[in-house]
Length: 418
Image (cartoon, rainbow, N blue to C red; front, side, top):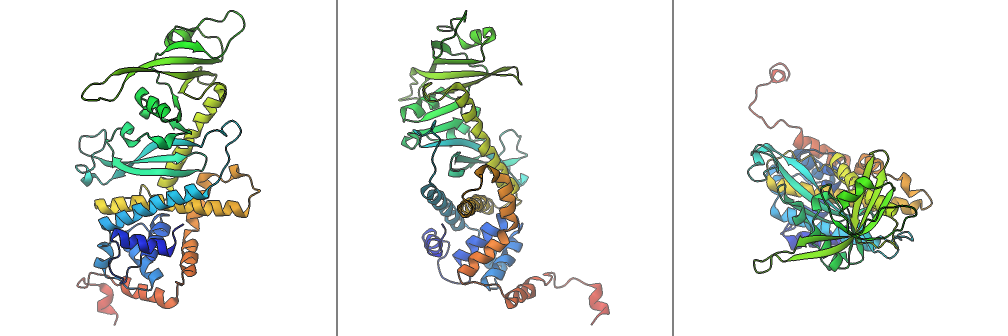
């Protein structure tokens, strides 16, 4: 996925490596991904020592610290895009018979990364008075492939709706939408581009019901022509499956927002535990998925929450204790790259034991095992590339790094021991 030729070519194209000197693009990539990305090293100084150990090179502090530049950020970002495309092309999976006509099931969401408070003016938090700083990491995930489809970094105050751009890419795919993206204009654009959606219905939404998708025996109430909030309190049935019409305004064109309407399917399923209806809005026809299927499908949104937890608890997305914006952005991309390498390793392990139940390979347990063995994987990768650790290399690192930089400090041992 990240061959030496690709890494060196990308380093040259992004300007990370202008002349072949002591910094090797291949080694710095793997040291960042499999050292910082799995929390083995938590500071730039420890990363420098890790690089020296792997590269058999002694570096000055300036040559290492000044390497965290806009060019490094572009290099890492290009590697993320390449890794996402690689996994998307390599992975082959079959949706079950109920979903066979769809190309994928996608989840869009974002997570907040807290930064040093001194960066509050540059990256202000959403709900603060200038005392907190943060960034918003927006991710589009394939629930089927269990991999990111796209990643973007935004200011924390960026509206969720601005983190997703609907286009032809959505055709034939189902997008599971959080309430933070709830907007009928967005839903209409998804449908117009040939895509499908499933979203929870906002509690205060009150659309008009124009058609019932199910007929009920006995003295069931007639819901057609009624508003949802008038119907739900009177229902005795477990499920409501109807067509609704919603009104909204299109995006402004020449300064004018024109009104429009669109029809969607609404599904309400009574939850005994919560003692209320869980309501969903979708454009997937009732002859394709049953109401219960819609509810279960929306439950797949939990996958992206698990991915965010994995990124923060295992791959150092929340370990950005620095005031340097360039280092922050670089290490965010490093965390995403560690996730991609983890997924690639996971797929390889699955190929070795294809008969084992995939459900038992849970994301969080896998991430623990991957992180614990990342140092061994780094050794194996570099050995494959012809780079091996030796005692002389370790001794050189000890010799250059173990000395206290405060040369003029008085020490008790110096006075009493020769």
